[in-house]
Image (cartoon, rainbow, N blue to C red):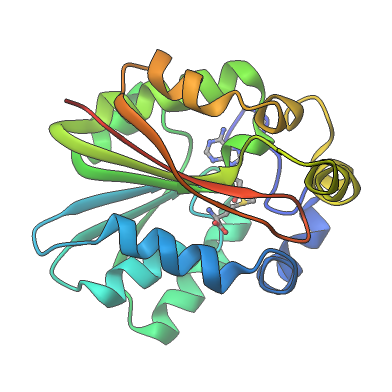
Amino acid sequence: MNEKEFTPALGYRFLTPVYDLAVGLLTREQLWRTELLEIIDPKPGDRILDVGCGTGSLVAQLSCIEPEAEMVGLDPDPGVLEIARRKAEKSGANVRWENGFLDRKMAQKIGHFSKVVSSLVLHQTAVDEKRSILSAMHSVLAQEGQLYIADYGLQRTRLMRMLFRLTVQLVDGVRDTQPNADGCLPGQIEAAGFLRVKEVRVISTATGSISLYRASME
Ligand SMILES: C[S@@+](CC[C@H](N)C(=O)[O-])C[C@H]1O[C@@H](n2cnc3c(N)ncnc32)[C@H](O)[C@@H]1O
């Protein structure tokens, strides 16, 4: 059991079964996930950790693209991991699933990684939690490791700000999500010790714009 609070995939637990459908319909998922997969570019021998893997869409696709890489999907919600397991079985993906938060104990259990990835997680965590997740990601990356994040970032236009308010902020609330919309992520990634932080791409969607970020350890 996890004592710490977390926001479920689609804001409320009862909506988790329709999470994949909602993301598919509302976020231009195929576009941003494909671009994210391309920049992650998994290689044989990579150890890749997906933090807040949810229903496992990203980590399972990474495993199918590069079966010679080792994948770990981590999420605090056992219910969402159940969906992830079932999906991965169907697609033939080989993923080790871990239920929990990326805290010190979990970090010791899962070891070090060449790549850490995360999609649509940080926007729905409190500011302190964003900091703590990024710092934990830094601690589990190998010296030459890379970080890849896809999430709602700076909402640059009135339209994107409005769509973000009417969708994401309706289900996930304003307190945790507004810092992302105000552009907090690059600074927070740097503050966690990452170098060469870059917003590689910004994709407009019906729920606000999703940014792809890359950063490295050296
Ligand atoms: C919107 S879903 C994204 C799921 C998946 N990464 C994707 O791209 O579809 C956010 C996920 O983050 C998880 N989560 C929430 N708080 C978290 C935290 N503090 N640390 C790690 N994961 C968290 C939730 O359980 C949920 O599965």
